[in-house]
Length: 301
Ligand SMILES: [Zn+2]
Image (cartoon, rainbow, N blue to C red):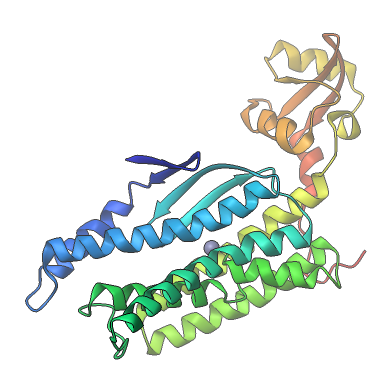
């Protein structure tokens, strides 16, 4: 989909975003609505506000040593794809809080402009009101919503970075994920009575919290592990596997970044570790699986 570049960061629109374009065009064409052009203009403004929010995350992340691959616009919001994220709680806090602060910043700017022209921002109307008013309210809502203490929302990351003052990363992640699930359930419960959209977002947050927890724990367990740390010294099997085109990795290959992708691609669910093209060991899928098995939530170690 159409690509823009801002400050060296690629901004991409996901194909599913077209659903939102259709919804806005259709919804705005109704009698008494802002009209198709007005509706699509408002969608473009919303998208721009979301991009500013994501750019704020990305720019702070770059300043703290991360690489930003791209920003993708989805119907439910934007996602910044970051790599080599710094892992100190301080960095996580700064990167996470930057987005909501940017949203509040846009809202404050809009409110100031409205104030300059003596306009009142009330009543709240995200549908038919003047675009400046809608920008203020939309960004206030986006900022506040993202600060909810629930993974994978920004507030969840802020919460985890604060919990890391008392707990290690794994426990802080578990606690933050649990709070995130509770917030998600509350959203769903409130949504049933208030707005089905909130139920939908609650489901998204609930599973997002679980996915974030699992991914973080895999990362913690595998951090710094090399192929030679997890391989079995089985030369016969190694030679056999090589005959069946099993992928090959170096003893120093990083488990998380190199061994797991090789395992995923391996038809025999195993990779051979070679040194100077001589097989010295074997890593099977189950050898890595037992390392990253996520145990019950009350695990202590
Ligand atoms: Zn954000």
